Length: 166
Image 1 (cartoon, rainbow, N blue to C red):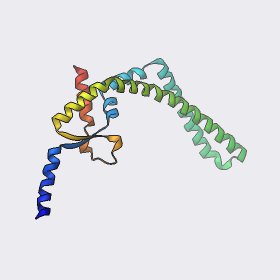
Image 2 (cartoon, rainbow, N blue to C red; image 1 turned 90 degrees about the vertical axis):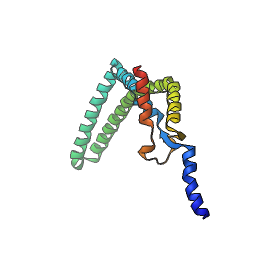
Image 3 (tube, rainbow, N blue to C red; image 1 turned 135 degrees about the horizontal axis):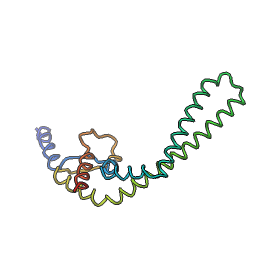
Image 4 (cartoon, rainbow, N blue to C red; image 1 turned 60 degrees about the horizontal axis):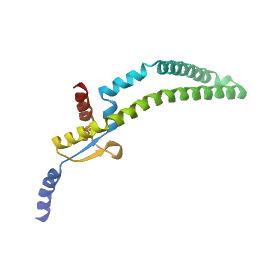
């Protein structure tokens, strides 16, 4: 009898406390139309375009070196293999350097947007929490597992897009 009573009251208590949801704020902001416009602006800058062109060229060269090494490694002397590996490592290092410059440019824009939109995002979250009866909201990064149905990230992005359109 006590077990049956507990089984009946637990769902009622959970409902009274509200829903549980998760959100990835960084993803919500960076997937917004505003963020995509800002990132596109960065990607259209001359410095970024030059770095991207250099990245693409280095990637192509590295891929060719890897293919050549894989094809010829069996007939290379140990000295030739060592020289080829050094050349591969050097090209890989160059590629990582340029990739870092590209990533840094995008991250700077992303961080600036995160700071700029933080108050707006907090307001959007308050509204969603109230409208959806959310009793517990967790940052996605601190959750080990959550089914996609618990995520309100897309709703936050949609709200940001609506506010940006106004």
